[in-house]
Structures are given as structure tokens and as C-alpha cells.
Length: 359
Image 1 (tube, rainbow, N blue to C red):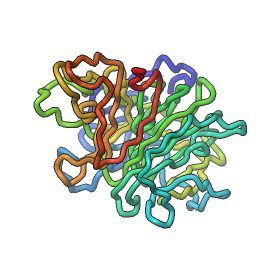
Image 2: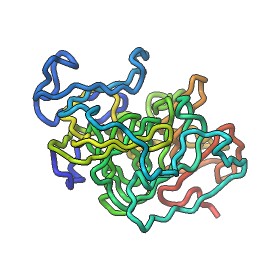
Image 3: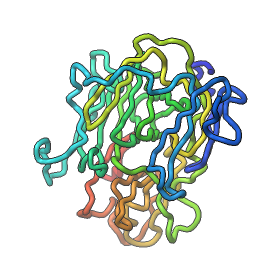
């Protein structure tokens, strides 16, 4: 199971889109089939799907989890009381204050009262609908305490978490991720996770996509290498908790509302797993940017780390783009990024440093 406090001793599996396998106890993974009549150690086999069963093989996402107790063993979900009130996943005229004016926000202050990741999560903007399975939301979070005896599950979409202040110690059903400022974590829809704060107060950004999953962008004329390398994406290794946990709470986000259910065990009781649907993290300092070396500027899309494509070729539901430290070398052009009016909305957050400060 490992030591919860050994933050620097985590081991990871490397690669993007791989079919991974991991076991915390030797021999816990069944051989030759996914769901035998009796699993090793009398574990329960459970599949978690990220796509429909009949999606093309190259797009099909699923993992098999082998756990001490089935995840469905909980009391019925009930609306959370008191209501959270700061999350949205349906964006229309009834809840919109849309404006074509560019807006800026100051960094959000860390609250004085005890606030964990769930309570400190709030929506800034978005479009579309989680119920229609098309759209996105941009959130921010501030937290000053770890999640205690509870786990969060997002039934609306995938989370891409970008810490700006303070490391996150994220426990998932597939294992643990340590995520520092300058790294990002992707937590797929339906996975349960808990966020601890080893450095105390934390603050950051969250991108959420409905009805799609993040992918690496095609490289086109760049060729076979560059931007984010698949080998730099890290997936966790199996880790589990055993024993009774009376009063454990599962907090589930569905339609932007929070629901809770009680159970008497930790959801992180997965002894082994295999598949390609898995939480993962990426260190943004490993991104290999490309830039202009003669005139004018490359479009900002050249800095795409991950993209969530739509059915329309070349059009993304959401692109996650990074502007890392890099050389900017060009002749006969304006030094800051060129002025442009875009058919896509842009949300920009600063992790560290100053963004393109020239004056």
C-alpha cells in the first residue's frame, strides 16, 4: 500500500494512450480473461468505460479494476445540503451574463474558513450543456484543507487541473498522483478521487469538457516529434486502502449539482487494474515549443498540449495551450503576440512569471 507521506517515492507508468497494467499485490491481475468466476484474492472485477462499448478500437477507452468491495455498494445519492451553488454545467440565457468585452480577474484569495477542493471549486465561464454531452466549463479552485473521509466524482465530464499555488496529492482509484505547479492532471469522467494539500493552501484552474476526451494534437508538417511527447505523460501505479471507513462520503457532480452518498469503505480499494482509461499527469516544462525564426508569428495553436476535438475537422471543443519560457526570434515584426480577433473564446491563466512582458 505504501506510505501516504512519501510524496517523493511515487512510481509512475510512462506513455500516452497506452494499455497499462498495475498490481499492488503480486498475482492480483487475472490472466487470460477480464472477469473470471473467481478473481485472485477474491477481488471483484469492475469495468469503467470512457466511451461506448462499440466505439472504434483506436478511440475505445476502458479499464478493468479489481477491488475489495464493489463501488456500487453505497447508500442512495441525495442532493448535497447545503447546496454548493457555485458550479455550472448548463450555459444558457437563464444563467448567463455573457459580454463581448475582454475581462480580467485578480488572483482569488485563499479563504479563511476551512475549505477543501470541492468546496473551493467555482465556475468562471463555459458553453454548452453537460446533459447534451457537448460543451465545456472553466473553473477555479482555492483550498486550505485536505479532503477528509470523502471522495469526489465528476459525472459531467473530464477534469484538467492546473495548480498555480501549492502541490496537490491526488488519490485516484488507479493510484496516486503528485501534481506540482507547472504540472497538470487529467481526471477522466467517472473516476473517484480525493485531493490532499501537502504544502497547505492551494489555488489553481480547472478545465472541464463534456462528451469528449483530451487527445494529443496531430503534428502535421512538424513531423514525428515535438510539442508534448507521449512518453512524458505519467499514469499512476496501483495503490489501495483496506478496512472499514464508517461514514465515508462520495460527492458526485451531476448536471452541475452535487449529490452525496454514504458508504463504509474507501473507494480507493482497487488492488490491481489494467486498461487505457486512466488518470494521468504531465510536466509542462517538458513541452517542446516551436516558434517563428524569420518574419511574423506562428498562430497560438502551435502551442497546443492537449485538444478535445469535435466532429468538424480542425475545430476543437477545447484546446489546452501553454506558453512556456522560449526564444522569440523573428525579423521585421511586432514583438508581442499579434493582435487578433478569434472565432474561439480564450481563457488565460498565469502559473508563474510574467506573460509576454515587454514594456
